[in-house]
Length: 422
Image (cartoon, rainbow, N blue to C red; front, side, top):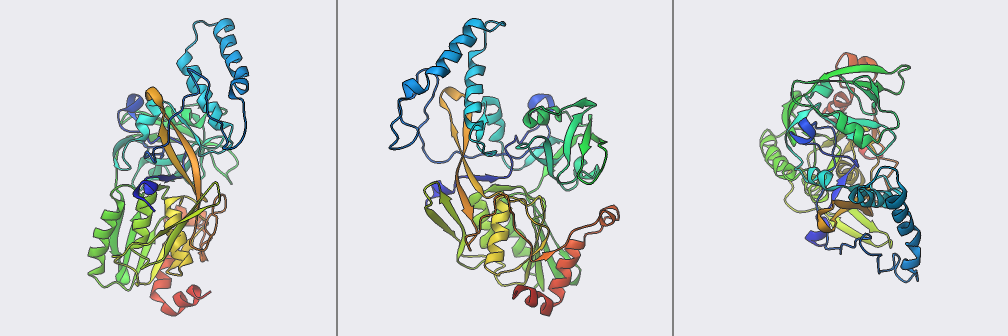
């Protein structure tokens, strides 16, 4: 296992992490921060046909293979009604189509502007509505609102689909473009038309954008001497912040610890390993399996501060990718209990490779990760040990039955051990 192999990003979203000042305002409504990985060569298909075979050992005449492409290129340049055409956009569109044809929502292309935005850090100050979204489907879909954000105040929920903005339908529009329409400066208002499962008619939500400070985690002591930590992302500083928070919490000699990963959309693989290592003394955190079926194991690191305290992990449909790595490892090692609802189910690893001449980058799914027991979670998610589904009445009354159940388990060691033993 090399440090290079760790420099990858696990995210649930093929979308932009939009920063303040971008696109005339900016809105924290996406989550797709990237890291460069490896040293793969960059080969441009444009300027001259490729010279290497796409599949090792497969004999392909690429000059012949790409002949129809260049014919189409020439026809557009010669016959399209609105001349001259923008050949740079044609080139970028061809790359986008190439990657889209793989049918993998997590493999794709970012143009130079998008790639620059995507290299923003995983924390900071931003102007917007304060929500993580998924742009891989038909609609811009809310993964989770950020705590204390305008999106949370507007009671947006995981699974909400944006079908119109400011009264203008966005049905059929690329969700990444819809995302840009949500942008705007602090103090401005955007009206989102939401389609929600279980609600018969779409409805409008008016949200005032504001500057949002994105913390990595929140920690506190609850009643009955129970420690509580909510991790909001797996960014560069999350593992350091977590270690500091645990050091302070453990001074109270808590009877148990609640790790809240609800609504956590993921982040860096190396951060997920370090975070998990705070709770697991030793052993495999995850396996990475490449296209050849070869597996690489990533083990827990020493020095964890909470490797023996009774532990409950909260998950829901907004818990994805890196947060699923942590939760899955804790579950497979029988280290603690998972409480809540089934997680998102994103178990693939992506790498970004910058393209020549500053023409953006391609994100390619290079592997999938498996839990220590070898479980695949893509499209499946993690099933909690104790299923707790909040009702509409709970939400309206601002109750948290999942947190309540976690507290109940930690205050009843016999029940905790009984569920753990199953």
